[in-house]
Length: 335
Image (cartoon, rainbow, N blue to C red; front, side, top):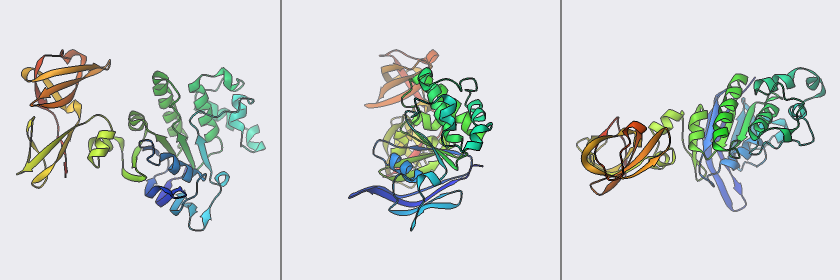
C-alpha cells in the first residue's frame, strides 16, 4: 500500500554551500509530484535527501507518517522503502529482465508471481528472458520502473528518467510510466527540468528556485495562475508587459486591460495562446515559427514585440498586417 510524503522545513547542502533553504512539500498517497526547476535549483539534492543519500541539516522528512530524517533521526536508504528510477535505468547487464526486477526481493517473493505481475504492469510481460542489451531505451526504463515497484515501496523517486530518450519515444514512455504508477497506486516524485513533462505527467507540480519552493499546485494552476512572473516565464511561453494600474485598468499596447489590483506600477503576464490574430490592422508580423500542430507568430505593435500562438489555418506571413484581440483574463503582478 502506498504512503504519502511530507517534507517540513528541510535545509541541506555541502560544507559552506547551502542548497536547500527550508523546503516544505506535502504529497498525498497515490499522487505523482513533479519537482521542476532549473539546473542548480536544488532538485537533485532534495531527491537525495528523501532517498537517504544526503544528510538533512535541519527540518524533517516523513514517509507515511514515519520520520525518516530529522533531529536525531537518519534512517538508512535501504530501510526507507524508497524505490529509485535513475536517469539511465542502471540495469544489471548480466541479469535478465526478470532477474533485474527480482533483484532486492526476498527468496520467497522471487519464487512467487510478483516479478511477472510487475512486468505485466509495465507492458513487458513477454520479455522476462531478454537481456538488457536486447531492449530499447524506453523498454529499459520500464524495466527500471518495474524493479523499483517490485518491493512495494512507500515512495518511488524518478530522477529525470526520460532525458536520454529521443523526443518521440520520450512522450510515449512518459505516458506508459504514468499509467503504470497510477495503476499500482504508487506515491511518486519525478525530478525534471522539462516543463512540458511536468505539466503533462504530474498530479502536482512543485517549482523549485534557488533551493526554495516557490509554488506547489496542480499543473493547470501553476500554468494559469503562476505565483510570480519568474514562475510564469519558466512554465511555458509568456508575454510580460510593464504597466501602470489606475482605477482597475492596466494601460498596455493591447489597450486597457481590467485587473483586480490597487493603483500602481507592475507587470501583466499573458500567454501567447490568449492573443488572437485578425487580418489587417496596426500590428506587423515579424516572424513565424512553425511547430507542426501550430505556430508561434511574433508581431510588432507600438514598438513592442508580442508572441501569439495560432493554428496552421490562421498562420500569416512575415510582413502581413494584423490586429490583435485578447482572450481571457491576464495576471497582474505589482512591482
